[in-house]
Length: 194
Image (cartoon, rainbow, N blue to C red; front, side, top):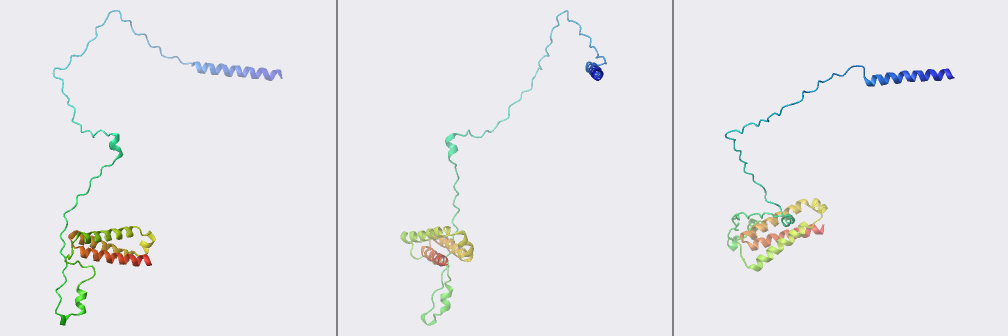
C-alpha cells in the first residue's frame, strides 16, 4: 500500500509542476524599451483661431404651450358651427275640388308624413312639438338591444318620422312637426305592446 501512495504522490507532483510551468508560460514576452526622459522643457503650441469664424444661428423653434395643472383637468372641445339651415319647400296639398267631385283619391294625395304649410306657429305649439320629439327620442334610446333587433323595420320608420318632424320644426312648420312626432309616438306604442 505504501507503494501505491508514493506513485500517486509522484504523479501529482509531476502534474502540478507541468501545470505551474504552463501557467507561467514557456515563451518570452516582448520587452518594450522605455521612453527617453525629457530633459528640457517643451513649449506647448495652440492653434491660431480662424480669422472669420462661421456664425451659426439657432433655428427658430415653435414650442407648445406650457401645460398647467388647471388646464389638464378640463378638456376643451370646440362646438360645431351650425350649418345654414337648408330651406325646405313645404308640400302643399292641391286645392280641394268642388263638393260634387270629392273622391277618396284626394285623401291619398295628402300622403302620410307630408309637410303642411305651417298653420299655427304659436310658441305653445312649438314647445309641444319639441317636447313630443324629445320624449320620443328618450323612449327610442331607452329600448333594449333585443327589442331593437326584433323590431328593426318599425324602429327605422320611427326614426324617419322623428327626423322629418325635427326638420319640419326647424323650418317653422310646427303643425307638421307635431303630426309627424305623434305618428312616431304611435309606432313606439305599438313596439312597446309587442
